[in-house]
Image (tube, rainbow, N blue to C red):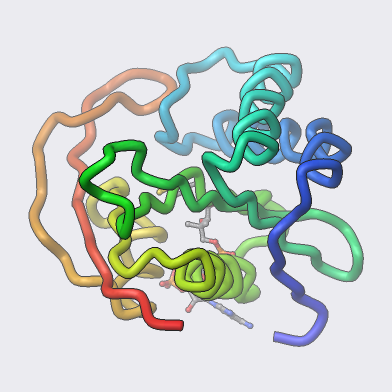
Length: 175
Ligand SMILES: CC(C)(COP(=O)(O)OP(=O)(O)OC[C@H]1O[C@@H](n2cnc3c(N)ncnc32)[C@H](O)[C@@H]1OP(=O)(O)O)[C@@H](O)C(=O)NCCC(=O)NCCS
């Protein structure tokens, strides 16, 4: 949609964006997203996480995508290169996050599209991701053409507790 721009950040931009990205992660956990972390989750926790991601970008282990809505960072996703020597062509798409006040406007769609393009530009031809079964992200990845592999029950906890199932997807990526 108009006003949304998603693009890969340089290592320096990733470092500068740590407070904004930490705030997005904190907002998502506070609003009930099952994205590895438990409640309570503070801004400092979010910044510590994205500081590590900025290190990964600088080291070439990941591509960090940011989505801007009218110039403000409102969403993010990562392309994480598979570290295994026998998987130089594979990546994981991880930590797709959109601020709760910026959802349902196509930001998530812009993020997954740009993550796929960035991964393909980096020579990755197969992508893998997983998300809570039946969630908004599950629908987003299905719309974006990802193939559902299967579901694992009781895979993770919601931030406030309680088990949730996870669905795994893959997609062949083309430049
Ligand atoms: C999953 C998530 C990233 C989606 O982000 P988003 O920006 O809302 O995604 P989109 O706007 O592209 O799509 C969301 C919905 O808005 C709809 N939509 C998109 N553009 C729209 C528009 N201009 N007007 C109205 N609706 C629109 C989509 O059809 C979709 O509908 P659905 O939920 O009924 O399927 C977001 O919900 C989120 O951050 N969730 C918490 C974190 C999380 O669970 N991340 C996944 C980890 S794997």
